[in-house]
Image 1 (tube, rainbow over the protein chains, first blue to last red):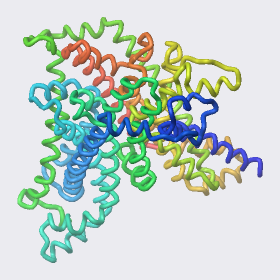
Image 2 (cartoon, chains in turn purple, red):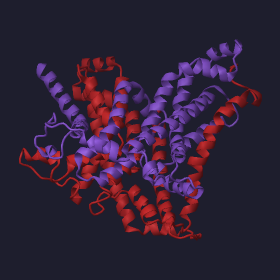
Image 3 (tube, one colour):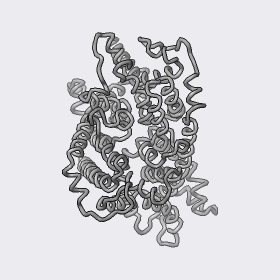
Image 4 (cartoon, rainbow over the protein chains, first blue to last red):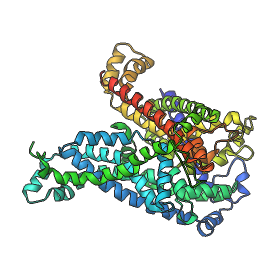
Length: 273
Length: 294
């Protein structure tokens, strides 16, 4: 019995090592000097810890600006998607109106259109409209990509909230809109958090559309900026690791804090599509 | 029920709530899909100003393009390899972590971590680990007198390497869904199975697998669709090389449209990708419908 437990714990250690060590090594390497990274076995604590790589990334490259661009695009996308997703999800959960089932079908249909298949047409549209090199086009594309899942997620949360609550609010003199914002939305907060995190991960990480739409260095998002940076500083692993760490740490901290909501949001597309 | 509106007079606030979402989806999702069909029938190019209708010429070119078929074949290999590994390992990990034991939530978190990272960050981490001269992985193999291996530089190894790195990043998805399905199974079922004399393997085969079949179907289709649409990881980690060995169909489409600036031809490839996706989604739909009969 004890051998079985020992085997289990050993397997745990191996799995955790495989999953975490690439991330841990990147963070450790970002504090090393160029010469120290070739020592094997690699040192876990840097012998001559240095912030040179960070100094370079923060002050002599565009990574910080691009980090800010990604934050901005993600934040506006979250705001737009969660607002529209909540309103639409609520209407679908509560109302019956002509064409409702058709609209739900339409919503599911958008999920069949792959992002890869639409990329060229979206680029050409933005090109003709003069919207290349704008963050607005990214916000619109990312919102449209996340909205169907966000609507389904919010719809299923609203369906769990008894409609009697809003009726009571409306009897007390609320308009339907006030009943939504003051009574229902606070109860649906877990759904909104899950929805927001799903949108955040998708918008923060998106690569192809950002690569196509933005060509100006100062306007690029973080993943595209990091891709360019990797190309410029080939083999300079401390600098590449420092740039990557700047992108990793906020995401991992957020994930560790809100793991449960992350899981709810990121699997929402599969659980009920 | 009273809260449901009976006519337009009660329904219009709801229609206002829905309208912006559908305007956005119409403009940014549906319109481009139709625009793409239109583009695929034209010789639209970013190099010339004029363009004209060319009928099915772009599609004929797709069908007779050996590089397209090569890319499609590699995409199917990537898809099959990813599917088998992610489902089998996802299920193995779900079964392992379903055993109550202290510390399992740490392992669960560790499996989920790479999943939230972007493909380019994953590339930044693995490029060095996989470097054939100075990389950590070859240094590790050298301690047991193996290697060095050209993980990303030997055409015969690069596809396997890409599949492994994407497995590391994406394993969480199949693991999570299967883990959630396992936790829905009542413990009593296992108890009665044991009383009837089932071994552990027998319990998995006769109780676990039949009960998680619907989830296995969902995972299979979702992983297939996402693997088929792979672009970012191959673009940033190998760029399709060496010698086209990791050139997947999404990357090929990108190159035709944006390296050779041939929008019309790229659109025709996009249409083929689109149709294959529809086919996969329909399989998904019908497989799920028949599952619900059980």
